[in-house]
Length: 230
Image 1 (tube, rainbow, N blue to C red):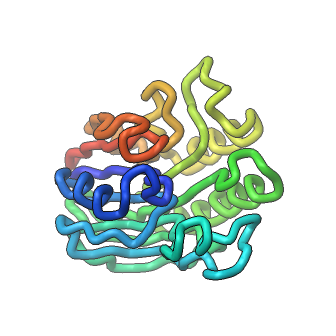
Image 2 (tube, rainbow, N blue to C red):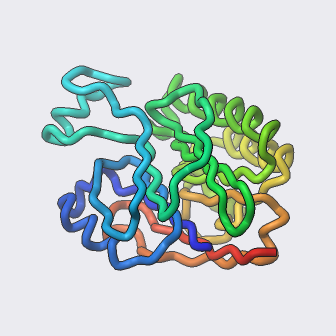
């Protein structure tokens, strides 16, 4: 099973059709986009969007309608080849999305997130971190097969602290991963702040790769993993 994530920076470096055309060349089972717009991706019969950012008004410091020239802004979008079987409540529906799927790995939940929509600016970063921690603990109580995917604005590599929001956020995330028995299998990718966090039980059967480098589609790397059934 192939899972991928990419922050497309509201598809600003390529136009929306160019970004869609680029992404359509890849064959993933699940694709999570952050800082997204509504793209038509032909490889995916199913598209699930978080609630849109309010239009034509300033929301958390920015009028997104003006910034994106009329495009609707979605912080997280999940594309899938299969329909979801259950939707979980999240604290902030404009930032997060939590969906359960019946897959070859069993019933798994994707929790899609951005932590640091304004990087280290408060109060946003603290709220987004706490929302993620709170939501994931609740989901884990129902389904231990939780995959946390998205833009963490954090590198977990030693010596790359400059790519992270702050030490407090990094440590809080590491503590959450330990508590939920999950692991950031993408943590060793250099200068990378987007991650796919998976249950430890799947990690021995997982490979990761960069499917697009920084500054091709956006200022983020696109990363993917391949998980084999145990």
